[in-house]
Length: 172
Image (tube, rainbow, N blue to C red):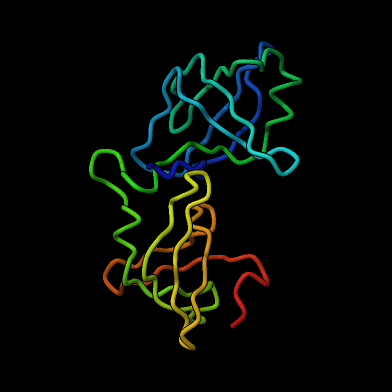
C-alpha cells in the first residue's frame, strides 16, 4: 500500500490578473507542475486540494490556474500559504528520493540534535498516516509520524534523519 502525503514544495505567491491565476513558487529543484495535477495548501488546519487546470512557466515559478479559483480575490486568499504536492513516501518517482525502507537503521534526532532513537521499521497500515517505528535508547518503542513536512534533513552518509517533531510527541 502506498504512503501518499502532501509535502510542502513551495509557496503560493500573488494573484496574476483578475481571473484567478496565481503564482506558484517552487523550492524543490527538478519538480514540475502539470495540468491535471493536484496541489494542496493548508487552510484552517486542513489540507485543501486544488486541481491544476492550466500552467504557464514564468522564470523560476509558475502561473497556475486552479479549479474553483476564478477571481483575484479567491487567489489572494491563497497567497503566502504553503504550496504542497502529493509525494509517495514508499515509492519515489524516477528512482529519486527515498523509500521508507531506506530509513530503517537511520538515527532519528530532533532539530536540536538530541537523539530520539533508531528507526527499526515503519507502519503504513494507514496509508494516510505512515509511521516510523523507533527504538529509543531505553528500549521503548516510539511511533513517529513519517510526515514529509516534519523532516528537516536527511544525512545519507551519516544515516541520520532530523525531524521537527511536535512538542510532547517524544519525551527525551
